[in-house]
Length: 186
Image (tube, rainbow, N blue to C red; front, top):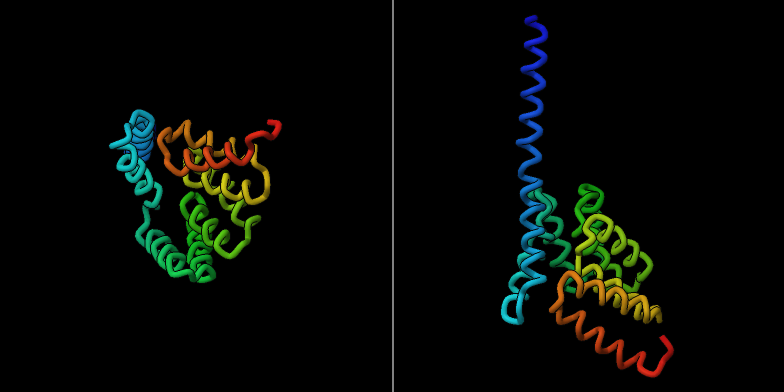
């Protein structure tokens, strides 16, 4: 009987610990769902602020060292040092393979040196990990345009508008694509 009671206590403790660990993660996802809903409902005065809140969440890995690698990679990319940026982002992806922003940032650096295939692959992985990453979708659209796949690019920009209806980049891209494809058979 004492062994059964001990097992029961251990099971209850393990269950309680799993709830304690899972609750913050579930709360974060629920909170992000709420912010995405705000983005859909945002008006012309509030959408950018809401989108910035989402971007800030995308950039948090949960690890100070991974956040440092992201920051150093972004700084290198901003200075045009794409190879250095790729090294930082590759280290980030190696150590945090479930952190979508690492792939997204590395995709931008790959694009900066003209490696579209590698950039597209990293954007694909970004979207596998975070299907609502509207900036990754925009990157896909830009690269599809460069590859002459206009209809696919349009589909990417339209997908952004389902998540972020007032995204100015997607709206401008769709307007540009409409002008480009006007008169062509769809």
